[in-house]
Amino acid sequence: MSETRVLRIAMNGITGRMGYRQHLVRSILPIRDQGGITLSDGTKVTVEPILVGRNVDKLKELAALHNVEHYTTDLDSLINDPSIDIIFDASMTSLRYNTLSKAIAAGKHVFTEKPTAETLTEAIELARQASRSGVTAGVVHDKLYLPGLVKLRRLVDEGFFGRILSLRGEFGYWVFEGEIQEAQRPSWNYRLADGGSMTTDMYCHWNYVLEGIIGKVKSVTSKTATHIPTRWDEKNEAYDATADDAAYGIFELETPQGDEVTAQINSSWAVRVYRDELVEFQIDGTHGSAVAGLNKCVAQQRAHTPKPVWNPDLPVTESFRDQWLEVPANGDLDNGFKLQWEEFLADVQTGREHRYGLLSAARGVQLAELGLQSAAERRTIDIPEITL
Image 1 (tube, one colour):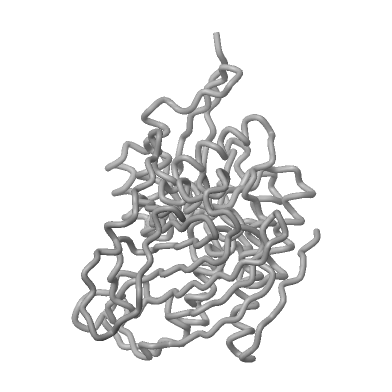
Image 2: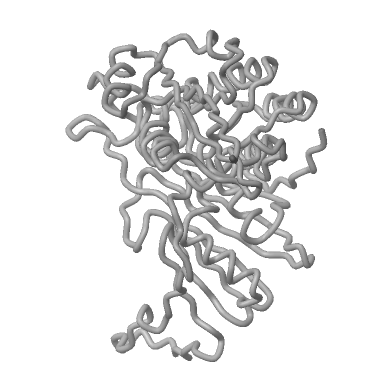
């Protein structure tokens, strides 16, 4: 008979939006309810979540709702519990370094949201600790598992674009101030002292997206803004927004073939959406172009590219959107968070290094840190190599 292993996972910050919706409800619970995953050698790996947070009443409610036996507000007790295999963290960025450092020191495997630390020094130190300890460490790189970007990466791998010239990204939506309509994001996101910042939040994502789709990020030129200076918190009290709520970045990339690619990504919590999805990336190349969101991807080959002529005196008669073809998935793609969790659990069981670890996360923190420096100094900053 095949072996079955139950991995006990302490899920910290599980009452937050991301921790609850994506990691518990759409990832760990479905993995549990499907009976786990089966590895190539026949071993079955299933999971037992333990809910961790600061509000015991909310934890109790979620545990009862989802048939989870154990919950606690005492994270340290789980870090020191020998029956716990994995510490997952989706709590505040300002608390993450201490949580992960203690977990690694206790010999726990770690899986975490981003950024992994508030500073590059701490992010690199975490990567060093994990490397020395031999634990399996994974960092959420969910966007690379999403259908739209899976299709986009496939086009790159197939040589669809020819020589890649540029990438343009648009991300964000209007986050209400909280005075009349409740804000869709927590107030700490807009306070610098609490770890808030669009740059800190999103540049770590853009680093792994750019690395995973095109190539290494070589330099950054960034402009930040706090477009909405006053917001209202969860108690409906006004506060000063001290963190940037928008970041406009230009990134120089290098492909594995040595080609230079210019990427531009706009990120804003103060923009209204006029696009098909909340985030979209367009890659243009000599042989074709493609636009990908979270789910959909459309492409246009060189042979099918129209030849528009600029004439502002006449109305446009052609529908440019209709000239693109949708890229098929050619397979079923599950929730991106769940897919990475399954890959990480397999790595824990087999002792493999997870392909998106703490060093990759450190490069994301580095890009955010240098992006803020670029904005403050109004200049382009080259990105040095990180070595452990």
